[in-house]
Amino acid sequence: MGTTIKCIGILTSGGDAPGMNAAIRAVTRSAIYNGLQVKGIYRGYRGLVTGEIKEFKSQNVSNIIQLGGTILKTARCEEFMTVEGRQLAYENMRAEGIDALVVIGGDGSLTGARIFAQEFDVPCIGLPGTIDNDLFGTDTTIGYDTALNTILDAVDKIRDTATSHERLFFVEVMGRDAGFLALNGAIASGAEAAIIPEYSTEVDQLQEFIKNGFRKSKNSSIVIVAESEKTGGAMHYAERVRNEYPQYDVRVTILGHLQRGGSPTAHDRILASRLGAAAIDAIMEGQRNVMIGIEHDEVVYVPFTKAIKNDKPINKELMNVLRELSI
Ligand code: ADP
Image (tube, rainbow, N blue to C red; front, side, top):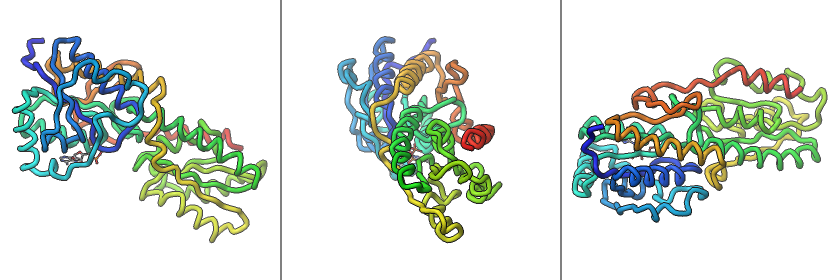
């Protein structure tokens, strides 16, 4: 205890993720419960640079737990990448009486928070908000479970048409350079294979898939491909099949931004609520410059440097599960 923090600022930054609103609600309510004042900062770091800041009461976050997107809006802010931009942000923060920041976002947003905290000695707490699940130090990130469920819903529908036409479908999902959505999406939707960046330098995943004899017992197949320069994406694999295995009738579906939307699942709402409340506990305990995560059902504090620098490992045994179950 013994903190001098009286007012916190909260912002969402980078790519939006379902559950960010549940996190905003949790941070706001938990702060007010603990006697802190709360200010909402709009459009990520841009709102901090331009001074788009508004006081938040409990009612400002009523009725938002079920909403996708972020009521605070989000943006990418080039100015915050410069010292001058961050200086402006700091001045606005002081003028508003904000003593500490809670930043909800992905890798880039937490990198910005780390640099800002270091330069201006500002306490910053990060919450992992990204559908990609690519932050080290937390079992899952806010938005990942909802996106995974959106993928299932889409793949279930694609399977109907794939089966009827006896086609091979490549379905591209998000994840940047992480294969969590692709691999777990494939297992959960009963797809025949997943092509993930973590594996792309080790083997030719297309050849492996074909070699496994996917047509022995099936006339249609679905392969989930993670979007990534490392895999080349679904189009690249469809093109390869057309050239190398012209006997297959191949189609591509790119799920795109629909994976970012929708009402958050129970898992994401509970995760966001726990992380939001824990962010305020951390501030009250005098913690600074950490990301809050949940590992093995326990709240953990992860230093920004660790959360950002370390790659979250993917469990490659899941590839074996997928292979075994798709015979
Ligand atoms: P995400 O948080 O989803 O990974 P981005 O990588 O786009 O999204 O980052 C969001 C914002 O965080 C950027 O627009 C920028 O304002 C800030 N940011 C990212 N990297 C840095 C950096 N190295 N220095 C300062 N700010 C950064």
